[in-house]
Amino acid sequence: MSATPVSRRPAGHWSDRVVARLGRKFVIGVPMVFLLAVFALPFLVVFKISVSETDGVRFVDLLTWTEGVLQLKVRFSNYLYILFEDDLYLQAYLSSIKYAALTTAICLFIGYPFAYFMARSRPEIRPGLLMLVMLPFWTSFLLRVYAWKMLLADNGVFNNIAIALGLLDEPLKMMNTPFSLTLGMVYTYLPFMVLPLYANLVKMDIRLLEAARDLGATPWQAFWRITVPLSRGGIFAGALLVFIPCVGEFVIPELLGGPQTLMIGRVLWDEFFANNDWPMAASVAVVMVLLIIVPLALFNRYQAEQASGGKA
Amino acid sequence: MKNPAGEFTSRVWLIASFLFLYLPIVTLIVLSFNASPLVTTWAGFSFKWYGELVRDSVIIEGFVLSLKIALMTATASVILGTFAAVALTKFPRFTGRTFFSGMVNSPLVMPEVIIGLSLLLMLVSLQRLTEDTFGVGFPERGTLTIWIGHTLLGMAYATVVVTSRLREMNPQLEEAALDLGAKPWQVFFLVTLPLISQSLASAWLLSFTLSLDDVVLSAFLSGPGSTTLPIAIFSRARLGLNPTVNAVATLTVLFVSIGVVAASLWMARVERRRAREMAAAVKN
Image 1 (tube, one colour):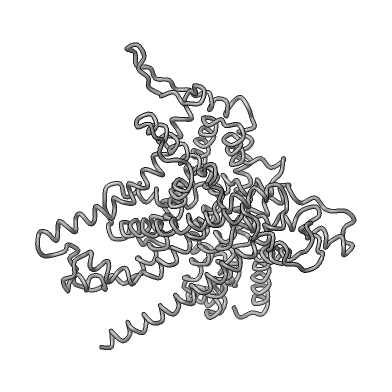
Image 2: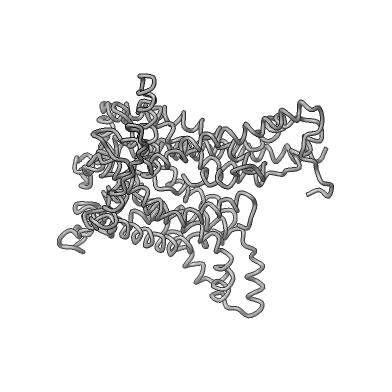
């Protein structure tokens, strides 16, 4: 940066300053209004509907004016039902968190060495490797999940090959089990773990590791005491990018999961599309938001730090 | 890494991970040429599912609709995302900044069922309100509502891409232009925009593919008669294996790979030319 401070304020005629100020308002205002209208407002609507009485097809207004009396009708029965009456919901929430945590752990286990070896590979092949990680990400997620169905089905590719080779006598049941669900989620979310880790590891100052070696550390010690602590930011970002969407995942449990694998995203979908119970679907969504609010806040803080040039 | 054992582990781990990533894609492609309607039992090479595809009106119409929505989404996402990125990088302080950045970033990770449901309930409430007030319900569920939902998601990704480019840009270039008397909007259009054009192209492609691929938001926001390609594929995939889905998949993979490779070659060329021009300008 230059030593002389540069004035940010456009100098010159007053009309230029007015234009600049209006421009600033416009640049901030347009995306702000869009987001308030299609992201923030819908959450208020969902909350309202989750506590609304339904009168046939319509939701009764929370506030009504009947015969000179202002009435506030709030119905918490959906929440009471979710929490105390039917343990399907609580089980689905717990099981979603369990699968999301398991997926995050496996993604970290496969993804950390993956990103590490990529970052330490020869500089001229790194762009190619990065491209190879990104490419599946660009091809349809839906079709890649569907592809696992072909591989894992009872008459699928794996079973056919194993039986043809005489390794199995009868097909191994893999589809619609916790195994196929976890595999599908790990497969889908692995790039989300690898990319932030790679971005972090590739920027790391190799001289720190050289210094550690000169001071007598074994490569293993240097790895655990220098590389891993320095890559905390990448681990954190990757884990949140995997965990949060996994909690509410719908497509993967629908295509690869089975009756044993209860996921809250599917419960919400069924409340909405199969039972047509909109207030119930809204209540399920509100509880899901409460469940992910802390990781979501951490993620937002991390993103804000990144954007304002904080530590990587 | 100097030691051969480490070198070996590294190779094996990378190769195994890439196999894991690519195995399903290769399987999809290979089995799309299978003559047998039993998708996973090989019965000879055939193009017949591609022939079926051409006659499959649900798939063709779905594709046309998806393409239309994806083009609209990518364009809107890049415009809104650039606005948001400029707001976040150039204006360190404004009212509601934290809330604003939270709203931009949350759709990146927020489960899509939540976004889809809440957006739908809001739009339905709006529709009922306008119906009661003006007698005409707006907006009708369909292309417009899917577009709004996809743009929310695409904008979040576009903002991340453009923000990271704006942050690594040399601020002295803009400052120099301001010092030389350019007005802020001139600086933006003549200096900033050309410098970030590559990231705008990436953001456009990213939101385009996101939109082309989205199932959950589209399912919530679509109305009767607005079946996008992913919705059509999803409803078939739910029922079991389907050979036409493999044919669609192969075409998608082909299309996307060519697109991504061509785009990155083009971007590399633009980058090299700009580096050359920059070097020449500094020398003069």
